[in-house]
Image (cartoon, rainbow, N blue to C red; front, side):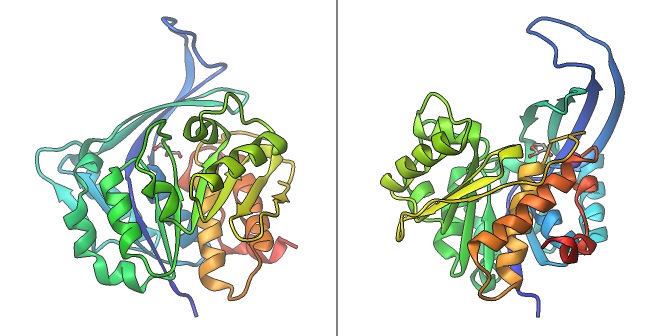
Length: 306
Ligand code: RIB
Ligand code: NA
């Protein structure tokens, strides 16, 4: 039976412009296409797990603008429990301005809007769902206070996605979650290391974060897969990613985390290696299609991962 995944985090409307390359500072360039998509790291991770068949709940805030209602409808269509999503008076929904180049690179600016108003009381309202969940997921597009409160209530596996990254932060962000998960850039910011671009630099970063109090660290490395280290056995795990033609990497990290949570919640006794392998496949698959949530695969992908 499917066990519960609760995500406490952001909903953003993604305004995406596709261009031949990313613009330089002060430069105006022509784009080739514009779309609006449902995004935000919290909702993306939740939908990634839901599409694979996960039983998911999202705790979030949307604005009282036209997007808020549309966003809730979108989540219902994806079978996400929306009972803890509040529409917020006098607030815009979260917005992300995204530029995606032909090489599949992206640049993102987010304006949190209603997401910034998600607070500890909202978390307390969802206390019973959070306590019951086998996996709880958090990010940093909503407040640190929200993340810490949720981590304190969680009784199962908790995953904190440290994104966007912080260079100064409450150490509880490292010590409370079961798994602290970041990408290369975020790992560099959290550790202060000058570069995290390959498996060996990621291992250095992971050891640094374990030294600061993490229970376990997972660093995603895009096409190079992901590494995992936990404080008990100190043995590095590296899982590689299938090679794919990159169309749009936006949200690939979210697909990874949603899939990881889905596997940990539903495959009892699964090894971390297998969970990461499935997550790498799901993330790589999402990169072959444009957009975030709309590009995430459904459960049909699972039997094809060996
Ligand atoms: O991780 C990708 C997401 O980051 C996008 O959907 C955008 O909303 C930003 O929050
Ligand atoms: Na994609």
